[in-house]
Image (cartoon, rainbow over all chains, first blue to last red; front, side, top):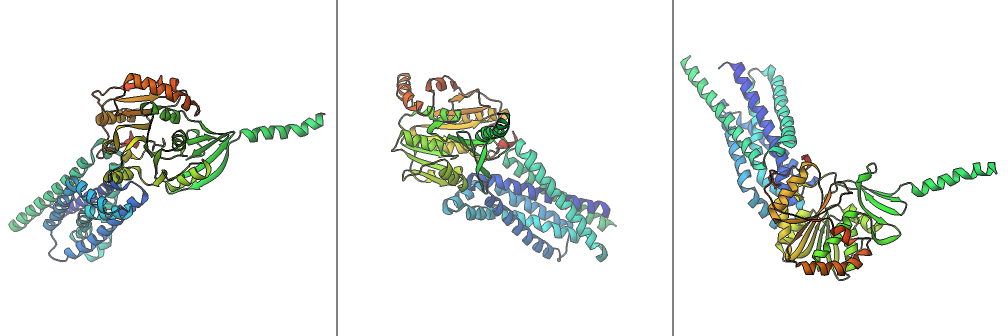
Length: 207
Length: 293
């Protein structure tokens, strides 16, 4: 595989990652509403948790990229993020019940519930951006341009993920179906990256 | 004479226009919306928008404390025919507090929990709509869904639940799902009734019917042809005999006429909606795009 195509794949994956992050964030409002309402403080909790998780994810993703960066590890991040989102479809109600039972104030209740449900998957999703930069940059002087392009595609993905989810997906599908689709897409993309990494290894050995 | 007329006429015209012009007497900005109190002739209204006439949320006659302005409040009061002796009432959505005041006037010993998400609405109801609170009639500033979920953890049940949280502009989607209705149903006493004010137009009407049928089976509706799309849904848990129903009608007709309610006329629109197979998806916590339908 040529490096142009290889880069395109990474940009596409970063786009999908941005798309999923905001799709999930919007659904978070739906998931919390029956227990904490949909007032501005509930959205405050959700956005806080996502921003916090992303900031940590950027830090960890950058650190991970220091040690033998590879498309193989990059693909694994996608698979882990998809798996980390799975409990959202199956265990969110017991967790929400538990928090609701113990915390009367819906501000702290929604904050804690968002933490329990979205923190870990969003950290993993946040690791993807800096890791992408590492895989894409081959010369120091182009690093700014690469980072700019990457922000462009991943934030464009976020914009479209927000729009698609809030305008259409919630009108067509159940919340859980949408979540499971995001899980499926992330895992499939991860496997695709692993496949490409494998075939590149094979072709490099033969060269 | 001519000169005098020219002098007096504008004043006369002005005074006429002043007496009929709407006047905003209070503006309150809250976390959720803008609230306006408007006086027009002898009617005072709570509004969430100045421009749109249809945005009247709650109105009272300034010169007649108990006469009801809106048909939908008259319809809701008329559902007492299913439950003429309510002891504990839950009202989700306060507005000007008209329903609470009317019930308190009819039953001085009644217990009422009014739930309203917006503290500014409660304040305006007290200051401008004479919303009465006693040690038995209370208001709780909370999301309706949260109040009901918390109430389920305690024991008290209600024999009359009124859902009146939709203002026609934005629907709190988590208050229209099957799960929410099931939770409300669990708060009802065995012989209690649940009444919902739903404005339903477009496809939402059918989704809503499917949802109510799914949770409650058959239900009654009171539909006002004059109002666009308002309908009152009545869930009657009790097994009221026809004779009892007629008896209730007789005993309530006079009391309700004080609120300017023509009980006979209202009940003429009463219809039983039988559960049937629907093509429309029921609204659930998983699927609740009420504002998009």
